[in-house]
Amino acid sequence: MLQVDNYGTVNLVEACRTLGVKRFILISSILVNGAAMGQLLNPAYIFLNVFGLTLIAKLQAEQYIRKSGINYTIVRPGGLKNDPPRGNIVMEPEDTLSEGSISRDQVAEVAVEALLHPESHYKVVEIVARTEAPKRSFEELFDSIKQR
Image (cartoon, rainbow, N blue to C red; front, side, top):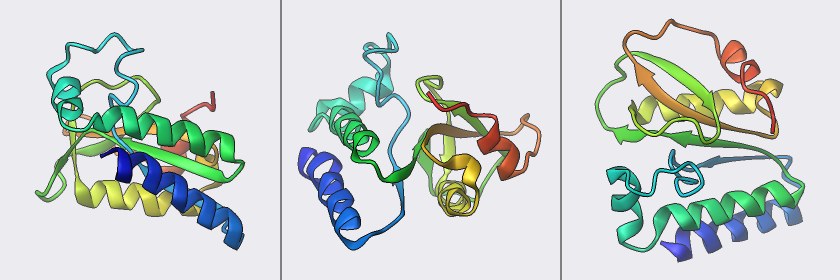
């Protein structure tokens, strides 16, 4: 996974910079910074790192993007579901969520909306879907996240 989740992302960022691309949206994962969050024993953290250190590679790629100077939004979804969306999107700041899931359709929607809303610039957001969560606009969701 190091080849794809770290080196592949670094190569994409460099290609974007060379070509003058102004925005970069990365789909990463919650728990990417699990060690710093005290989640080393979280079953999801263990599972995602057992084969190829996936989360560690994703974290390294995120760190590269942040230092690259490109205008980014990093989207960290919970567990990905192929099912239709259930519930509304919950968006939290980085290193906040340690569990939850979301449909792939909703993740794609967040990525597209990040391109349309300047409130998403230079931010890392974590997303899951919850049936009890209120419906909020994407402007509200992105604006609720303060840049670190």
